[in-house]
Image (tube, rainbow, N blue to C red):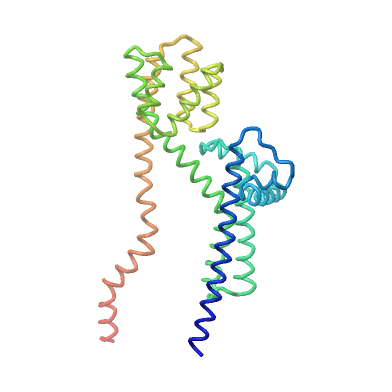
Length: 308
């Protein structure tokens, strides 16, 4: 009986494998034909269905689904939320307009999962916990799903702003050296862009591109400030704009700004160092001190118990 069952199973598996291979080979052949047809100049398809099938599967299936989720997200979000999300993506350095739609689609999915998790944990009781642990774990799961996308986006914005804030003093030092060596302000920015890669150099490159495209330097620098939203960079932008307006030496302004930014970076480092003991108190109180008390006072408590 066993060999017969094994033979039947092998035959079924072979049939399924043959069917899958035939389907995949047809799909690959059609994909090759479509790629070849796309390379032909002036090729036209009379059938609308055939014209739609020329598009990739991702574009035909995934994009309408994401568009539906984006529509749901735009309908049920508060007024002004989409604009705030778009502004945060600009601060994060994301210039693709479709990122906002993808974010809204992901937020709809996470909220749906949060609702399902709430029903499964607090109504159906599928979580093998009870009492306060169940409440804490359930609230953490639901809150993480609801607030997760916004937290990730805010973290990305903070990381990019911190990078610009930390890089700005070194960039200003290089600008001071380049300008005092005889280069113009734009040529000095070009040297900075090629020498110091990062988010700040990307913003300088975009600002120079806007200037060379015909925009005013002050307008391009204000636009760069709006894209970054960093107080130190705003101070630098305002100083350069005032220097252009009143005819002050760019080198002198850059040197004063460099010294000021370096002092601010040192103050930021000192501030972070002062916060470290306060942040260390939480793991010390809840993790280190209980174990230390158990090791130090445990034998004494046992001796006192035996003596009594």
